Length: 282
Image 1 (cartoon, one colour):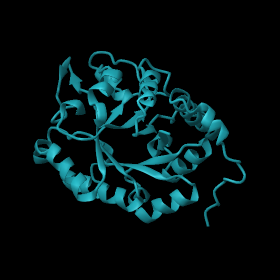
Image 2 (image 1 turned 30 degrees about the vertical axis):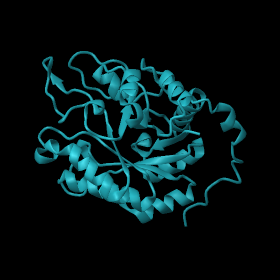
Image 3 (image 1 turned 135 degrees about the vertical axis):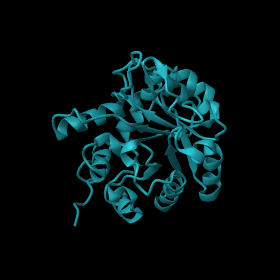
Image 4 (image 1 turned 120 degrees about the vertical axis):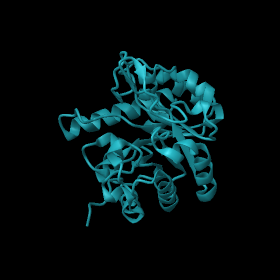
Protein backbone atom coordinates (compact mmCIF):
# COMPACT_ATOMS: atom_id res chain seq x y z
CA UNK A 1 0.00 0.00 0.00
CA UNK A 2 1.31 3.45 -0.92
CA UNK A 3 2.41 5.23 2.25
CA UNK A 4 0.94 8.67 2.97
CA UNK A 5 2.97 10.94 5.24
CA UNK A 6 2.81 14.50 6.51
CA UNK A 7 5.44 17.19 6.02
CA UNK A 8 6.22 18.86 9.32
CA UNK A 9 6.14 22.23 7.54
CA UNK A 10 2.39 21.68 7.08
CA UNK A 11 1.77 22.70 10.70
CA UNK A 12 3.80 25.94 10.53
CA UNK A 13 4.02 28.16 12.55
CA UNK A 14 3.86 25.29 15.02
CA UNK A 15 7.05 23.30 15.54
CA UNK A 16 8.38 19.92 14.51
CA UNK A 17 7.01 18.07 17.55
CA UNK A 18 3.54 19.35 16.70
CA UNK A 19 4.07 17.94 13.22
CA UNK A 20 4.76 14.46 14.61
CA UNK A 21 1.88 14.70 17.09
CA UNK A 22 -0.71 15.91 14.59
CA UNK A 23 0.42 13.33 12.03
CA UNK A 24 -0.29 10.66 14.64
CA UNK A 25 -3.64 12.13 15.60
CA UNK A 26 -4.78 12.41 11.98
CA UNK A 27 -3.65 8.85 11.15
CA UNK A 28 -0.75 9.43 8.74
CA UNK A 29 1.77 6.67 8.01
CA UNK A 30 4.80 8.83 8.86
CA UNK A 31 6.38 12.23 8.41
CA UNK A 32 8.71 14.18 6.17
CA UNK A 33 10.93 16.43 8.28
CA UNK A 34 11.63 19.86 6.82
CA UNK A 35 15.06 20.95 8.07
CA UNK A 36 14.72 24.50 9.40
CA UNK A 37 16.35 26.91 11.83
CA UNK A 38 14.83 24.79 14.63
CA UNK A 39 17.73 22.71 16.00
CA UNK A 40 15.39 19.77 16.69
CA UNK A 41 14.92 19.27 12.93
CA UNK A 42 18.66 18.64 12.62
CA UNK A 43 19.13 16.30 15.60
CA UNK A 44 18.91 12.57 14.79
CA UNK A 45 18.50 11.75 18.47
CA UNK A 46 15.64 14.21 18.96
CA UNK A 47 13.89 13.17 15.75
CA UNK A 48 14.10 9.48 16.60
CA UNK A 49 12.72 10.23 20.05
CA UNK A 50 9.74 12.03 18.49
CA UNK A 51 9.30 9.25 15.95
CA UNK A 52 9.07 6.65 18.69
CA UNK A 53 6.86 8.73 20.98
CA UNK A 54 4.29 9.48 18.31
CA UNK A 55 4.57 6.21 16.34
CA UNK A 56 5.54 8.06 13.15
CA UNK A 57 8.36 6.69 10.99
CA UNK A 58 10.48 9.33 9.30
CA UNK A 59 9.85 8.83 5.60
CA UNK A 60 11.95 11.65 4.18
CA UNK A 61 14.19 14.61 4.98
CA UNK A 62 13.62 17.87 3.13
CA UNK A 63 16.95 19.68 2.73
CA UNK A 64 17.22 23.31 3.96
CA UNK A 65 17.06 24.90 0.53
CA UNK A 66 14.55 27.73 0.95
CA UNK A 67 15.64 31.32 1.53
CA UNK A 68 14.64 31.27 5.20
CA UNK A 69 17.18 28.50 5.84
CA UNK A 70 20.08 30.26 4.13
CA UNK A 71 22.40 29.89 7.13
CA UNK A 72 21.34 26.41 8.30
CA UNK A 73 24.45 24.17 8.22
CA UNK A 74 26.40 27.10 6.81
CA UNK A 75 26.09 28.62 3.36
CA UNK A 76 27.80 25.91 1.30
CA UNK A 77 25.02 24.10 -0.64
CA UNK A 78 27.21 21.00 -1.12
CA UNK A 79 27.46 20.73 2.67
CA UNK A 80 23.70 21.22 3.07
CA UNK A 81 22.99 18.36 0.66
CA UNK A 82 25.55 16.07 2.28
CA UNK A 83 24.31 16.84 5.82
CA UNK A 84 20.71 16.20 4.74
CA UNK A 85 21.66 12.79 3.37
CA UNK A 86 23.60 11.99 6.55
CA UNK A 87 20.57 12.93 8.62
CA UNK A 88 18.31 10.75 6.48
CA UNK A 89 20.57 7.74 7.04
CA UNK A 90 20.73 8.44 10.78
CA UNK A 91 16.93 8.42 11.15
CA UNK A 92 16.23 5.61 8.68
CA UNK A 93 14.61 7.79 6.01
CA UNK A 94 15.10 6.48 2.45
CA UNK A 95 14.54 9.82 0.72
CA UNK A 96 16.00 13.33 0.64
CA UNK A 97 13.99 16.04 -1.09
CA UNK A 98 15.98 18.90 -2.61
CA UNK A 99 15.19 21.89 -4.82
CA UNK A 100 17.23 22.78 -7.89
CA UNK A 101 19.91 25.37 -7.09
CA UNK A 102 19.47 29.08 -7.47
CA UNK A 103 21.35 30.33 -10.51
CA UNK A 104 23.64 32.47 -8.34
CA UNK A 105 24.92 29.44 -6.40
CA UNK A 106 27.96 29.16 -8.63
CA UNK A 107 29.65 25.78 -8.88
CA UNK A 108 26.78 24.00 -7.12
CA UNK A 109 24.34 25.20 -9.77
CA UNK A 110 26.64 24.14 -12.59
CA UNK A 111 27.41 20.69 -11.14
CA UNK A 112 24.09 19.97 -9.41
CA UNK A 113 23.24 16.75 -11.23
CA UNK A 114 26.68 15.30 -10.45
CA UNK A 115 26.35 16.39 -6.81
CA UNK A 116 23.00 14.60 -6.52
CA UNK A 117 24.41 11.36 -7.96
CA UNK A 118 27.47 11.50 -5.72
CA UNK A 119 25.34 12.06 -2.63
CA UNK A 120 23.12 9.11 -3.51
CA UNK A 121 26.09 6.84 -4.05
CA UNK A 122 27.87 7.97 -0.90
CA UNK A 123 24.90 7.65 1.46
CA UNK A 124 22.63 5.09 -0.21
CA UNK A 125 19.53 7.29 -0.25
CA UNK A 126 17.28 8.58 -3.00
CA UNK A 127 17.74 12.31 -3.61
CA UNK A 128 14.45 13.33 -5.21
CA UNK A 129 14.74 16.65 -7.07
CA UNK A 130 11.58 18.76 -6.80
CA UNK A 131 9.93 20.66 -9.64
CA UNK A 132 9.90 24.41 -9.08
CA UNK A 133 8.39 27.46 -10.79
CA UNK A 134 9.63 30.51 -12.72
CA UNK A 135 10.38 33.81 -11.04
CA UNK A 136 9.24 36.64 -13.24
CA UNK A 137 9.23 40.41 -13.08
CA UNK A 138 7.68 42.68 -15.65
CA UNK A 139 6.53 39.62 -17.57
CA UNK A 140 10.12 38.40 -17.97
CA UNK A 141 11.22 35.01 -16.63
CA UNK A 142 14.30 35.65 -14.47
CA UNK A 143 15.40 32.00 -14.74
CA UNK A 144 16.15 31.80 -11.03
CA UNK A 145 17.01 28.09 -11.06
CA UNK A 146 19.81 26.19 -12.75
CA UNK A 147 19.75 23.73 -14.50
CA UNK A 148 16.02 24.58 -14.50
CA UNK A 149 12.69 24.04 -12.80
CA UNK A 150 11.71 20.70 -14.36
CA UNK A 151 13.41 17.51 -13.09
CA UNK A 152 12.09 15.58 -16.10
CA UNK A 153 14.61 17.56 -18.15
CA UNK A 154 17.51 16.87 -15.77
CA UNK A 155 19.98 14.01 -15.64
CA UNK A 156 18.77 12.76 -12.24
CA UNK A 157 17.42 9.36 -11.20
CA UNK A 158 14.76 10.44 -8.68
CA UNK A 159 12.25 13.27 -8.57
CA UNK A 160 9.54 14.90 -6.47
CA UNK A 161 6.33 16.24 -8.01
CA UNK A 162 4.72 19.19 -6.21
CA UNK A 163 1.22 20.09 -7.43
CA UNK A 164 1.31 23.66 -6.13
CA UNK A 165 4.56 24.29 -7.99
CA UNK A 166 3.02 22.83 -11.15
CA UNK A 167 0.12 25.27 -10.86
CA UNK A 168 2.48 28.21 -10.46
CA UNK A 169 4.59 27.06 -13.40
CA UNK A 170 1.49 26.25 -15.49
CA UNK A 171 2.93 22.77 -15.95
CA UNK A 172 0.48 19.92 -16.52
CA UNK A 173 0.82 17.77 -13.37
CA UNK A 174 -0.33 14.58 -15.04
CA UNK A 175 2.03 15.11 -17.95
CA UNK A 176 4.92 15.75 -15.58
CA UNK A 177 4.15 12.52 -13.74
CA UNK A 178 4.10 10.64 -17.03
CA UNK A 179 7.25 12.37 -18.29
CA UNK A 180 9.09 11.39 -15.11
CA UNK A 181 7.96 7.77 -15.34
CA UNK A 182 9.90 5.53 -12.99
CA UNK A 183 11.98 8.49 -11.80
CA UNK A 184 8.97 9.83 -9.89
CA UNK A 185 9.58 8.63 -6.32
CA UNK A 186 8.01 11.30 -4.15
CA UNK A 187 4.80 13.32 -4.33
CA UNK A 188 3.99 16.51 -2.44
CA UNK A 189 0.24 16.25 -1.99
CA UNK A 190 -1.28 19.70 -2.26
CA UNK A 191 -3.09 21.82 -4.84
CA UNK A 192 -2.98 25.21 -6.53
CA UNK A 193 -4.56 27.55 -9.04
CA UNK A 194 -2.70 28.65 -12.16
CA UNK A 195 -0.93 31.89 -11.37
CA UNK A 196 -1.58 35.21 -13.01
CA UNK A 197 1.20 36.61 -15.17
CA UNK A 198 4.05 37.95 -13.06
CA UNK A 199 2.56 36.69 -9.80
CA UNK A 200 4.64 34.47 -7.52
CA UNK A 201 2.51 32.94 -4.79
CA UNK A 202 3.04 29.32 -3.81
CA UNK A 203 -0.40 28.37 -2.47
CA UNK A 204 -0.13 24.79 -1.17
CA UNK A 205 -3.89 24.41 -0.96
CA UNK A 206 -5.78 21.45 0.46
CA UNK A 207 -6.04 18.86 -2.39
CA UNK A 208 -9.32 19.29 -4.22
CA UNK A 209 -9.42 23.04 -3.50
CA UNK A 210 -7.43 24.04 -6.59
CA UNK A 211 -7.55 23.11 -10.26
CA UNK A 212 -4.73 20.56 -10.45
CA UNK A 213 -5.59 16.96 -11.47
CA UNK A 214 -4.52 15.66 -8.06
CA UNK A 215 -7.15 12.92 -7.82
CA UNK A 216 -6.38 11.69 -11.32
CA UNK A 217 -2.63 11.48 -10.66
CA UNK A 218 -3.18 9.55 -7.41
CA UNK A 219 -5.54 7.15 -9.17
CA UNK A 220 -3.05 6.63 -11.99
CA UNK A 221 -0.23 5.87 -9.57
CA UNK A 222 -2.38 3.44 -7.60
CA UNK A 223 -3.38 1.62 -10.79
CA UNK A 224 0.28 1.29 -11.76
CA UNK A 225 1.16 -0.04 -8.28
CA UNK A 226 3.59 2.80 -7.76
CA UNK A 227 6.08 2.26 -4.91
CA UNK A 228 6.92 5.86 -4.04
CA UNK A 229 5.85 8.13 -1.18
CA UNK A 230 2.95 10.57 -0.94
CA UNK A 231 3.60 13.44 1.49
CA UNK A 232 0.97 16.04 2.39
CA UNK A 233 2.53 19.49 2.17
CA UNK A 234 -0.22 22.04 2.77
CA UNK A 235 -0.53 25.41 4.47
CA UNK A 236 -2.57 25.41 7.68
CA UNK A 237 -1.54 28.76 9.13
CA UNK A 238 -5.07 30.00 8.39
CA UNK A 239 -6.43 27.49 10.92
CA UNK A 240 -8.38 29.23 13.67
CA UNK A 241 -7.71 26.56 16.27
CA UNK A 242 -5.92 23.28 16.92
CA UNK A 243 -9.12 21.45 16.06
CA UNK A 244 -9.41 23.33 12.77
CA UNK A 245 -5.80 22.53 11.87
CA UNK A 246 -6.38 18.84 12.57
CA UNK A 247 -9.49 18.95 10.39
CA UNK A 248 -7.46 20.28 7.45
CA UNK A 249 -4.81 17.60 7.90
CA UNK A 250 -7.45 14.89 8.18
CA UNK A 251 -9.28 16.12 5.07
CA UNK A 252 -6.01 15.93 3.14
CA UNK A 253 -5.32 12.38 4.32
CA UNK A 254 -8.86 11.24 3.52
CA UNK A 255 -8.49 12.70 0.01
CA UNK A 256 -5.32 10.68 -0.49
CA UNK A 257 -6.81 7.46 0.90
CA UNK A 258 -9.89 7.81 -1.28
CA UNK A 259 -8.07 8.36 -4.55
CA UNK A 260 -5.36 5.81 -3.82
CA UNK A 261 -8.14 3.27 -3.25
CA UNK A 262 -7.27 2.87 0.43
CA UNK A 263 -10.44 4.22 2.08
CA UNK A 264 -11.80 0.79 3.09
CA UNK A 265 -8.40 -0.43 4.23
CA UNK A 266 -7.83 2.68 6.33
CA UNK A 267 -11.19 2.32 8.06
CA UNK A 268 -10.55 -1.33 8.87
CA UNK A 269 -7.10 -0.54 10.28
CA UNK A 270 -8.16 2.53 12.27
CA UNK A 271 -6.47 2.25 15.69
CA UNK A 272 -8.14 2.55 19.06
CA UNK A 273 -7.55 6.23 20.00
CA UNK A 274 -6.82 5.35 23.63
CA UNK A 275 -4.66 2.28 23.08
CA UNK A 276 -2.56 3.97 20.42
CA UNK A 277 -2.10 7.32 22.13
CA UNK A 278 1.58 8.28 22.55
CA UNK A 279 3.04 8.61 25.99
CA UNK A 280 3.26 12.24 27.21
CA UNK A 281 6.71 13.87 27.27
CA UNK A 282 8.75 13.19 30.38
